[in-house]
Length: 212
Image (cartoon, rainbow, N blue to C red):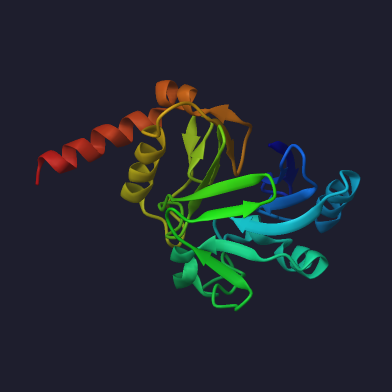
């Protein structure tokens, strides 16, 4: 898998353009802003966009969505948990009930030529946040960051839910290169060892469970 990371906009949101080693069909994950930069990167590599995937529907991850969709005609995928956010605030500028948007759930697989990504529901930052698992890579949106996690104080956030999501990711067997919605890449093994929020979340959830 080939991965190009573009860091876009005032919120420094990571947009990923991915394609198979022997294919020119690509997927764009989180087109947060700056359609010119995104489209230039696609043209430079001679790619054709076959899928647009949103790890969640916050505005800093969807700012160039409409322009990219108009430019490419590619289908859009977003976690079904985001339907609650139907234009509820400026945080959520997309309409999940748009017939051109495909709602995905845990275990679904989004495939283009040479790439398959399994959907993992990882709520907490938003109700419908998803992560995407490919061959040795994880795209974690605003759930898991290098040495950190996403905030939970915005509309749809849930602190206990994000700790459950972090635990679920940490418990995946094997190691993965982790590409998050903000900040640089890391590995799942490094985060298992050193991420405070994963360790704190495990202890908190264990404590809650023991009190039931």
